[in-house]
Length: 290
Image 1 (cartoon, rainbow, N blue to C red):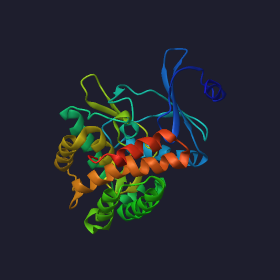
Image 2 (cartoon, one colour; image 1 turned 90 degrees about the vertical axis):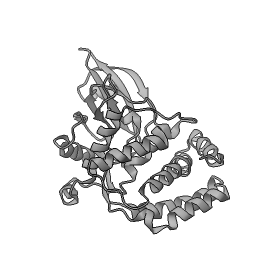
Image 3 (cartoon, rainbow, N blue to C red; image 1 turned 30 degrees about the horizontal axis):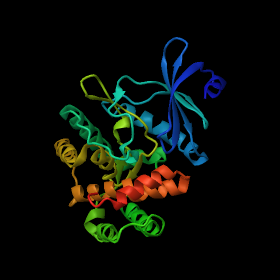
């Protein structure tokens, strides 16, 4: 990583490696003058192809959102580098891959600010997004993916019959898939949120998964991280900020969260050859309380 940075004209000393990201390997580094840098290297060629899209998106959002966003100074298919933003992550790890995550207790100001950002994203006119080249999916596409994922997981992960029935009922209920596609960040787990010393939200990271998609995608990671009570508070602030959740939205978010953090995590582990992800997923599937 040091040599890769030097090849792009940046002399740094790596101090920490973050391997938790599914799409990028991240290295925190320090320059000769003490400047802190974040280096991102795509894990797969198809991820590198998304870099220009993310760059256009960041420029589009910079003047619209009241939080800091990364400002890339090096952008190439093999390396992204930017000066580290102020603040610290609300939590160090993605709760999707923790074995027994305890709910995080964010401040009311944090939830209010996060809900405001989500509402602002969701009301962005889709016509303004067309030049960015974002993926266009939506609830119907996600429904088909859930159907496919459940069928595969029954064979590969051994989903218990009661959970098969539960998630099949969720998939079959039209009311869970009625939302209009919106601009979503798609991965708002605590490690991607930066807070100041008082716990206020001041920055957002990692926009790789941003798409025009099911608006529930922006509540799944917070639901897992903050628990049911945190989700209720976030949704209340979202409505106050002008968000308009459709019928059965909370139930849909809850099922989407459980499904992603078990079935889709396990299938991702099988696809990438990560036995730890598979083990976490199977444990969650076997847990009757999840």
